[in-house]
Image (cartoon, rainbow, N blue to C red; front, side):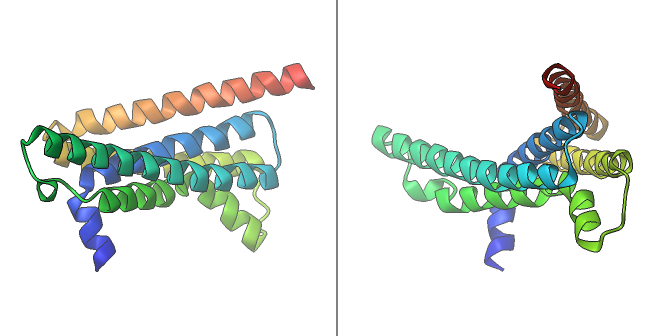
Length: 180
């Protein structure tokens, strides 16, 4: 119950963390796939990214909210209670980063655990489709928060996520050909 209330009170941080989690992990997965790295390497890099970057985002969210509270109190314009909880904001950011950031890794994880024998290109295609779905859902949530057009929010989320994936895939592929 505490977690659900934390997410509801910090929807902005949840969207921010989720989008960043999906983009960064998607970039790690597509970059590693572009470099033709093994599933094991993709999983190691992906999980390290999800947990370390999720923690980093949570710390940043906590310090940002705490600084805003302290500044407002120092200026005498409000009380600390008038702001969101720094801890709640950091928890929402971390949870969304990890949950949504896991989506690009989910196909690789399931294939590894269940030994489904997916070809790397197939795993990448499924990962891309699932992650694009996540970007679309984040866009819809963002539209709800910002009151902008749903189609605009979805297209922006999809476009930014795809751009990060294309950049990382091309760089991974290019570096793999230069190094090998």
